[in-house]
Image 1 (cartoon, rainbow, N blue to C red):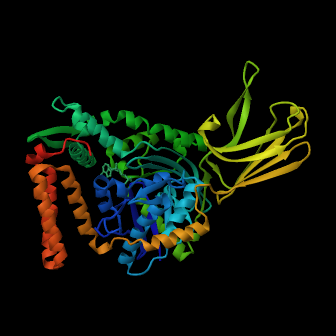
Image 2 (cartoon, rainbow, N blue to C red):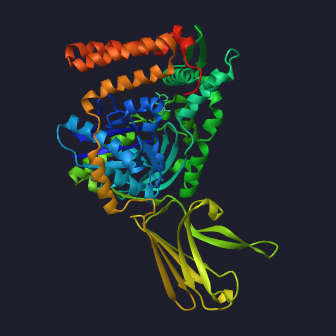
Length: 575
Ligand code: AMP
């Protein structure tokens, strides 16, 4: 059985192709969104999801989140004194999703289609595949997130030529991709985005608006519990405004109710600067593909924040037509991954959809440029393969030495979009011996060939002698070798995952711990006693007692989190 996985920065989802359709799989808590958080529990077992997210505050030294951001690098995070790479942390999330799918399907799962952002570099893709291997999942092919969104909408079945744009606004990132379907080939023609723009910024804008009230001092921003509750209230107001015209942000402070009514129109006003920033990546993607918005056949929405009517309106205005949004935008990528998994299993109709990629970054060499005063300035970047070129691709440019009779030329290869190489990523060097000729007679043809597997081959031919020097840039020093992957796989197998069937209780206890740490005095002592009592019920292992105790313990935590008389006991110190 092959499953489809949306391995997200904040949340991950798994879906399967079952009974002729894509279906989302619930986790041990019965939810379809699993926070991409990992924590090492006190018994050394690994917690994934909501329980781990609760522990971000109580056990930051044992908990990790947002590790998708450093996929493909050799950065390590230390958890409970052990070091983990992003691939390994992602592998825990994948293992947990795999277990959910196995429980849902009642059969073992050995293979997955995993989605990645279209702009993911080769190193980031390889690291994602490694994460799959470490979780015991074969990953034949990674699927671009926008392509997945298109598959979920059945764009691959349209048959003829079509072009569409995927507008993906998540919690913290904004990605725009333009895709083209031509004679059964689906191609990402361009991708652009903003890594620091998402729904969380809109929630923060509501929080900032609330702080304009006179009775709130800026100091309150240091009160972790207050900020968390205000953030939660702003988040629910934002979600309520996706359904109605008005909502209320409510919070209690020192026994007093503070409330702020907010209308959709005023939310739109405070978000204007954020909404403005959505335009630039759209324009860049259109520019890169040489397309006008009216040449697009369809606009597809993805990412939870596109549920907001003000975002939908903006998209409608930007493109002069309504976007497609019949599928929940936060589920569309996982659903598309399941479609791809289904196609792969049937391997007939679906095989007809060939997907090609683009090089997500420009690739080029360092050059010196001539200045107006006759001097030269080194350290400049000359792109040879431009960003968003379809791969495989081969391009050649000619370069000359800086001075006459120069006897060697060091070709420094970079990836990136910046004017100066110091701001781009260095990929490798190629040393060329030159004949001591006049510079104009000493040209070098530099050919870059970038293939579908993400291998860049650099060929430099000295024009005069026709001598060619080659360099293949493979992967990245931050990646694991096959032997290392095997070794880590064995190590990870030794680490126990927390049992799925007790996840609900474990999550509840993690939540109780978080609330306990944020309280002081009598209330804290009282909650401590309640926790011990609940733990005792669990230890007795009597299901007739556990189920009602679980419900009342959960209700009690909810009431503590919203209870006014506890405010004087909130710890005013940031934690
Ligand atoms: P994603 O990364 O796709 O899961 O998107 C998460 C973002 O979507 C968060 O900022 C959420 O606040 C936002 N979001 C989810 N549901 C809604 C909703 N109904 N209305 C407004 N924003 C939402």
